[in-house]
Amino acid sequence: MSSAGGRDVAGAGGQGEAAGGLVARFDRFQQGHAALGFPLAVRQKYSEDQGGYLAATIAYYGFFSVFPLLLVFTTTLGFVLRGHAHLEHQIVHSALGQFPVIGRELKTGSLKGNRLALGLGLAGALWAGLGAVIAAENAMNQVWGVPFRCRPNFLHARVRALLLLLVLGGGALAATALAAAGTVGAHYGIGWKVASVAISALLDFGLFWLSFRVLTAQDLSWSSLRVGAAAAAVGYEALQLLGGYYVGHVLSHASNVYGTFALVIGLLSFIYLAIHVTLLAAEVNVVASRRLWPRSFSIGAQQPATAGDKDALTQRSKVEERRTDQQIEVHIPGREKP
Image 1: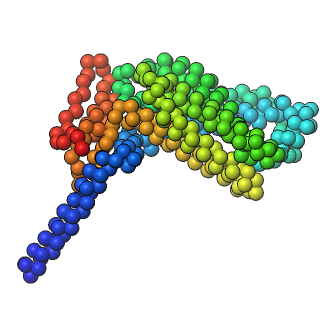
Image 2: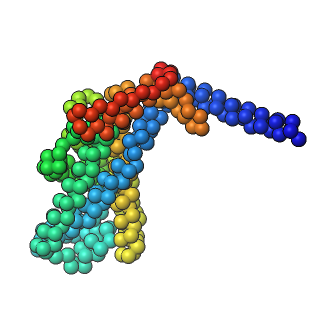
Image 3: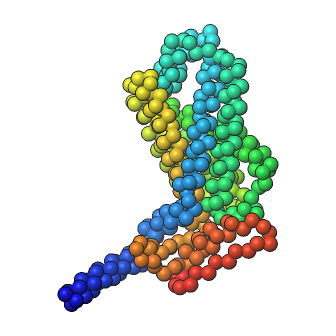
């Protein structure tokens, strides 16, 4: 009995050692191959920065800013379309005419302008928009490891966020409109669709490049932000194309009640995924420019630390410095190079 039990324990120990050896071999392999090691390092840092929670905070304010903007937009349409039957006909047959509630109001001709609704919509959009920009600033500072003592104060952060909201918000609306024209505008030719998508992608690239620079309370070089801006532009454009297809082929066949739920779920999912893409692209910039890779790959058994581990965890720890006379030191014993 005892010898059998001993063999069982030995067998389990041998399997554990074999699994640990397999993980160690994979760790050495990924550290020596950038095509695998770099994405793993980006994903590791994204997890350490709690990217999912940062994305959820931005998505919360971003989601609530959409509905006041829709109120502003529809109220403005009520003023603009008054006495312009031809323009109203064109909008009814566009992507906007496929939206629940809004589309029905357009088709029945019951959409009217209201000054009170316009004012409430602008106030709500401004409040939620400022919250989204401040949350985005906090996320960028977290990603780049900017200590709390170096971040803008309460008043400075909100004045800065207001200016950024006007500039970046206007550009984002223009890029979204171009992407929508290229995906669901059935009466446009293929040449116009391709051109609108290409222009939208270029505008997205410029917006992400500028956003990564101005949202971070640190002096960053423009060259260190190009790769992430390009990755974010491609990912965001792909999401816009999928969103256009969703509007044109799903919402157009939905009932008014079901379509409203589908619109809300679709908007929330789109905003959350778009922010994930943006933050991952920002992590690409940080990992590449600060050489925070290769990282150790530890599942089940912890692998020896690399120089990338030490630099990334040191940066993550120094974020908590809140006074000018406070210093945080990080020591990780063990191997530092693969």
